[in-house]
Length: 418
Image 1 (tube, rainbow, N blue to C red):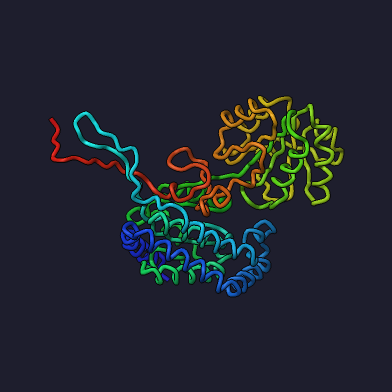
Image 2: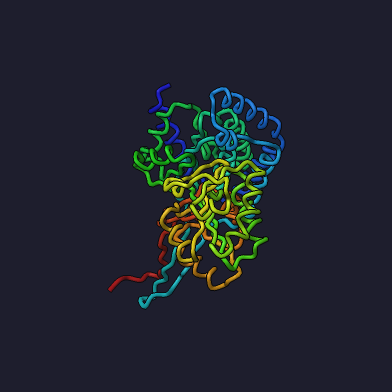
């Protein structure tokens, strides 16, 4: 295959489709989304069979448990893909929304209109549900999408893509509005991230190596996050039952996602109360604990935490624990070692909670709840295209609004500038 010619064709088709999508009405987009969901429900067995073949190939290739977890589909996750598409269909269409209209002294009206970004390239590893989520969000926000999944999920992605194409076609929308790249050749990624004439933004979802490569080589703007070094801080005014429940869930509900807690911070005044029962929960679930000196004085079987552990995103049943003196030290630790992704405080003190919200410099900051809630579906976005830790344009889970931009609109009645 001539990769460059193939990608140029994909890009041209996407650009043409993006113009049709920008003018598509809300009813057509919602019809397509619901048809995609119906097709996924109907073809659930086919999707699971394709995924099982991908999993078999991945095991044979020696992929680690975290990657296998991301790759896996089951009846519940397939149903969630369909539900995500239906939820997106119920959301308000952001395209064409005009806000902040104001009369100027000259008599003109000036405001802003929300518009699609155009063509969005999504590059992702393992997670086949991204194919449905990305297709749905790009469609509803009036964009065309070029999807390049990892080779480990090629069969799953193709099965989902068939459902997506069926939904687009049934609503009279161009099938090229969502294209899944069919080659696993890595050269296709190099072409995609440099096609400035066809692609308006790139969203990488995957491991740090992938995102670093995309960020370094892309000539198209990138929406991204590099690491998910997420923290939970248990304050000395926390409700112990809440603290233990949240700290357990934040780490053990799933190990692979980027919003899983990697470092637990515990106030020294409650460490002897909180850490022993928590440590037993983690032991029972097979979590390896690594702690500071004060932690190891309470949890005798914890390994020594090194400086590298405070920076680590394990994506595995491993947890770093540090005992801190107060809220100030907790905030300083998070802002020093964290990745500006998601961090939580457990406290019954309103003033401390407000300080934590203001002073922790992360894209999601949470009070008295698990970091695992930092997710587009849980935030009511229907799904997410990814999570951004950038500070320009979009931050946190990126849903419909994050896939649009704004342009100035001016209304006059023959006005001229004097």
